[in-house]
Length: 165
Image (cartoon, rainbow, N blue to C red):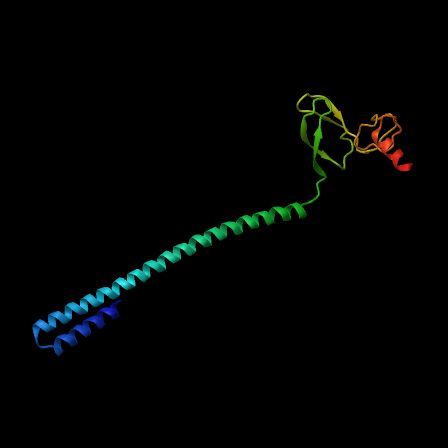
């Protein structure tokens, strides 16, 4: 900015030395001042536009940075799900056969000693069958894992018999 001031002063000095008529010198100096103000206004407009664009770019950058952080958090969650150590603890969704309350229980698959769970709604004890096998007298054909248990009421038995024919 100081170079600009020096150049302006130099040009003004040369005009004052070159023009002897005071009236003409005054008019020329006023016109140079007007011209300088026009240039300053143009520079102000350009600066304002640049500032506006920089703010816009900064906002877009912040939005992209937020989106990137969300994506990174999702990736981190996926990685932890994939690479987490197996603890043997799993969440099981259980429907109580007494009150039809659906709840989640944390049970260990490795520990088959967990043979019972208490329903949090009706407080009845629900027996767990880890083997998923069906004995002849276990389900009367109404369990989801029934495969030809021999009960006459078992719908799956009837379907198997129909397919055999």
